[in-house]
Length: 285
Ligand SMILES: [Zn+2]
Image (tube, helix red, strand yellow):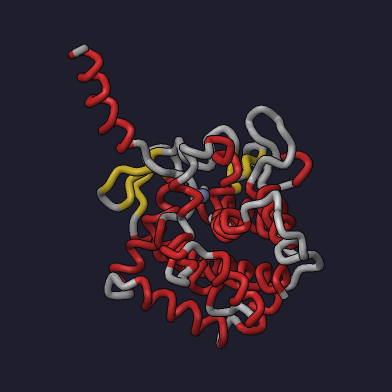
């Protein structure tokens, strides 16, 4: 009995230490969802307000990391946060790559975006009892459009999207995947934005309406309701050109890496926000 108790006590801190390497960190998702919510049409804004849980107080950003919090309870959802592509090819193909470790088709972040988009397209179509939970569908979709814009969520198979590449972020030990989930954003917030995420969001929003305004129209364009294959193809290219580039086991990443990669992170956060809004506007339009 005592041994069992010890095992339980010893096991809990261990669990808490396992890094949650399943997407942008909380701030990355918050940034993307805040940008998106500010760009919603009236119809989409109404639908989102109706679907958000009461505790979100009408703030999509506050529940944008919900999908990471439920991935132990919803064990089936874990492979839906990323795509593994063949090592060193630097390309993505839906048919070849969108499957889970057991080879089941469509179980990747691109397949999940299509699935939850299709579910939400049936919202308000007159049937009183739906087979879908539209609140969960909205929270999953908002999270996964964020994840697919994190370059290392469309990474190489053998290193699990750089989760097995140990590096130093300045003086701290971490893994390359986590650098792109959180460290680059956190260092930028500290250094350029007074540790205030709202100021970073403001800056990105200003750029979207000024220097990026022409590009932003192209980011939003999609011949279907949503275009995850485009987002994923850009992702693996950015992973090869910027995330993996020049990094090996135990690399020390500091200003050279940070200052040359921060524009890529800013771009992906802005694209994620613009595309989440465009997708929701097309769904609820
Ligand atoms: Zn995730």
